[in-house]
Length: 302
Image (tube, rainbow, N blue to C red; front, side, top):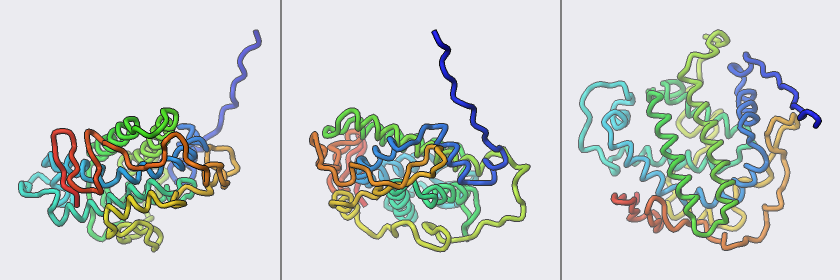
């Protein structure tokens, strides 16, 4: 029997991993096999993820307000502050409503085009902003809470997707795999701002540009959050609204998708996949963002 052919070993420049965001993202995509298959799953699944956003935002902030150490960040802008926390802080408090607005925008950004470097630049900037850089009013959230929150979001989405009554199992699996890879790359783009690996390559003179939240390179790239939850869901269901059309890859064969139209861009929907609105998420009935019931808990819509 002939020996199995082994793939040639790829060279990864260590310095580039810590000095070039594009190189780092391309390496992560290659390592995780983030390919056109994942892009195709995101194309067909974006409408389902968008429909989940109002419920996910409410569930996440209910969780963050269960612990004083995570709740204090909304008052003191730091999870390391050891003083007392306002026990009256609730999901309807002004600062929480403000943060919900940006989480909605962030989750909508995850439903945009990951073949564009701007997508990953913004995810990297989100990491930077949580270590006190790039903001006029610094925010410091310790990494333990970041990792836990990302895992919590992934868990919510995985359960909601796999329990969706109108998706074929192969599509569910594909979407879960694709969104999980995006979340884990986001996890790395948080971690890179906390760990000291590669410090020997860091240019100490670089000062991050201070921009308003939701901006990148002076341009607003997030929704301002003023749209209602109904509008978010209606936009997701509108014909031709899929944000993953005409995706691109670098020609270097590193796993980045090629700029091309897929057969799914205008393909007729099959197998009952006509409705992006899931019937439940953690025992949740999504009714236009109102009176969302989460298992034994009840979360009122914004």
